[in-house]
Image (cartoon, rainbow, N blue to C red; front, side, top):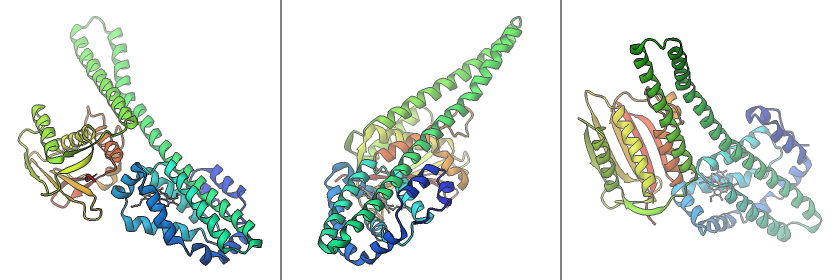
Length: 389
Ligand code: HEM
């Protein structure tokens, strides 16, 4: 029996997964027998990869992922590596971790599980053809069985990883709700008790009422942000093509009207020749709003400066890269992940939804967003968005 070490249960906090893999009982003998036919079965791998790629390229949603999210060579290498790693002599924890990582990566990049399932359908078909053509008849049954078990195991682990990563994100949000609501609710509750106790002191009451109103406003804002976030979660992007510079100017105008950019010098350098991006205009407007508001709030008051620049992404020419730099204390490396988690805020009345909202919207539009300390003492947010077809 191939070993499934306990490590897998620990690292994935999922005993069921380890048990399932154990129950599939892929024996060492079966693995070695399959390994003998490695070269024949893998012979047409490159041809299959091309067909696989083309198949998904013909599906509009999948095409957007393939064109804009992935780097072609990275993707090809990843798929080849996975293909080769099917032929092995042992199923160990590292292998299961590797498959788990694929499900997680797919989830991060919005590669829906339905595409992966469809992919496995194609892979099974490919192996069936190869076995019929190239494996001696007396060995076909066993080789088919081993391949089927291996593909089942792969699909199962990837699906489990995809689901668990999704649930983990939801749980983080729910934990955040509890955490953020606890404070205002405690303040409101405590003040009501005090008012009840001390009803005869009107001046004292005024202070308490103001505090109650303020906390209540905070709760209202949290609820509104949760609503917007969940709406965005469910909403499908309304794809259009629009000029980035105009949208940025619109957002800057809005922020100026709200007095959010007072005294700040703003430079905009857009790359000539690539004025447009593809996406949901309203969602992207909200992204720029959240990022620019964040930049303005974090700015160094002695040197209030924001620089916005665009260029073609060097590693994936189908994307535009938009950089937003602001002066101010750069974020600590260990805080960067937290900044993208809902409810994390360093501001007293902040709900902590700006950057999580931006990240979700960018992901839905097949883009990426990163935040990093800038070399010139400040913060650099980089957003990539698909260029039009
Ligand atoms: C069905 C079987 C599939 C297998 C076995 C598979 C395997 C892999 C592997 C091994 C990686 C690298 C994971 C890592 O970096 O840790 C990966 C990444 C990725 N896969 Fe898949 N994949 C499958 C289906 C698909 C499909 C159908 C799509 C899209 C339509 C897709 C899109 C991607 C993308 C965009 C990445 C990220 C590449 C990057 O990091 O730039 N995959 N996949």
